[in-house]
Amino acid sequence: MSNAVVQRPSVSSPASRERRAHFIERIKYARRMQAHFAANESALLRLAFDQCVEETGGPGSDFFDLEYRSMLFEIGIETNTSDRSVNRDVDQAWNLFEHYRKTARAWRSGDLARRHVEVIIKCGDPIVDDEVRAEYERLVLEYARENTPARTESYARRVAAELDPEVIAARQQRARRERSVRVRDLDDGMSQLVAEIDSACAHAIFEALRS
Image 1: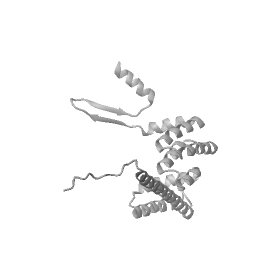
Image 2: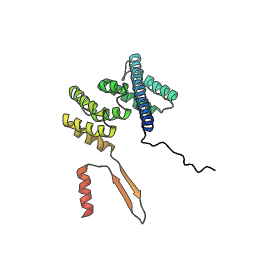
Image 3: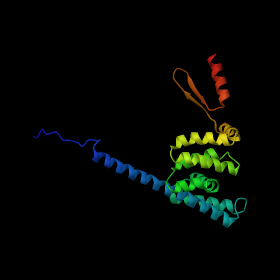
Image 4: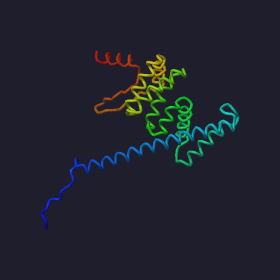
């Protein structure tokens, strides 16, 4: 039996670094392709919606709702997706290609991930003025190309609030609609109460409980 020790290549060797660099480049390419195809899918959803509008006269017509629901159902069947998810994706596609076309182009070119696109739309939606929204998109898009979606979201919130002070009020209204209260039972007859409420109310309750 041989007692020879098997020599493993060092992870810091030139050959190892070259292999890792190759893998990373392939991963980057795969991610860009994923973004490209996801953006193309979004564009097709927008086209499908536009066709539905053209053939029925759009929302408010006698036939639009039936045709639109039929479209959602057919897409859902063919993609193993719920109607609700398809409807959400169609809404996002319409918003994207209507109000954030530069973002759509960046997504299609592979410069952004889906999550980047989602946070750009979400944080910019409260902005009503077209010129303000365009400036918001320009600033946030430049940042998003070089940063993670999480960092982009923080930056986008700040930019939107600076460009349009009414965004803060709209954000608070949405938070009130979406806030929730949860109770989790603990041992010894105790429970944990978790509530998403206005900051001022939260701090007031906190101080009252401590006093």
